[in-house]
Amino acid sequence: MWGGRTGALLRVWGLWPAGVLGRRPLSCNAAFVAGSSSPQCWNCGGPGGPMRGDGFFCPQCRALQPPDPTRDYFSLMDCNRAFRVDTAKLQTRYQDLQRLVHPDFFSQRSQTEKDFSEKHSTLVNDAYKTLLAPLSRGLYLLKLHGVEIPEGTDYEMDRQFLMEIMEINEKLAEAQSEAAMKEIESIVRAKQNELTDNVSRAFEQDDLEKAKEMLTKMRYFSNVEEKIKLKKIPL
Image 1 (cartoon, one colour):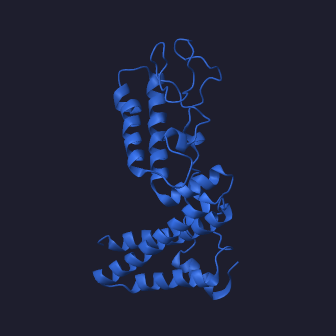
Image 2 (image 1 turned 90 degrees about the vertical axis):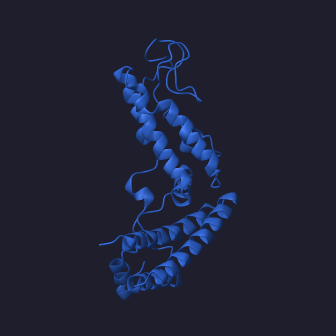
Image 3 (image 1 turned 120 degrees about the vertical axis):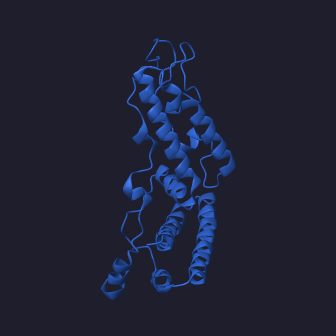
């Protein structure tokens, strides 16, 4: 753990990275409806029950079914469970699903279906946002492997890396021109691209510890990116 002046400076700069997983776990279970344990359709009693595959609707009465509590984001968005994702395909899948389950299409349906629609739509939104961004996608994939990064810890970060983050934040605080801001943005973007490639290789090699280390570093740079956005907002 870091202590003394360096640790204090890190707290002043707010460098403890805001954990995506630290806020609300990106688990699909959080958005699921507590449906019947029976495999039958809640409306007509026919074979159907909680959503299976892409069968959002009962094949008998066409009533919208509750989400499947065993389905993860990758399955829902028709993606391989891997760090590399085809974002164009992901966006198409997102749009297709929202055309099926968005609440606007259920205004004249039963209250039960309206509730299911809200849950489905929220789940699809969460899945899309999570898998679209490399950082949240990597953290979610780690979570599926049973690995989580404790929030507010720096035990895995070496002194050189933390000093690098501090220097970037100092430059950001002192930046007074658009050119200076663009230079910092360019540096951070390059670092994030490099780390994203490293995370991808780590997952491909099933090296979860390496992926965890790289994703932790990405969270630090993500923190810097948020500060850049805030500084760009006119007072």
